[in-house]
Amino acid sequence: MSALFNFQSLLSVILLLICTCAYLRSLFPSIIDRNKTGLLGTFWKLARIGERKSPWVGAACLLMAFTVLFWS
Figure 1 (cartoon, rainbow, N blue to C red):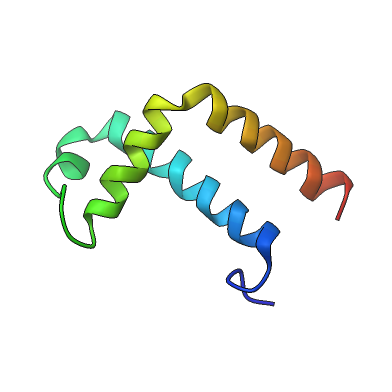
Figure 2: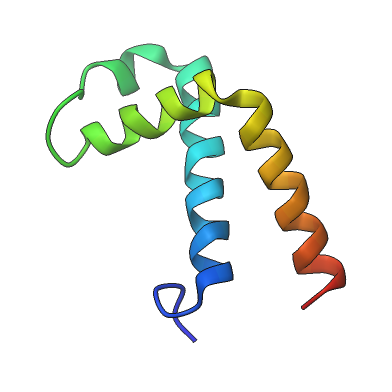
């Protein structure tokens, strides 16, 4: 089933995007920071969410990992 139709898969994809964008911004800040508008601006926004809400994103990743491993 596609991740668009399964809510748990959609949440997993969004969390992975947030974590990946925040990690890539820490390694290569100029690549993410140069595109703040448009379609590529979405990655900048996801990186900002990952940086500012870091404890909450980490807790959500742990919770999602637990549900994927032990509940599904």
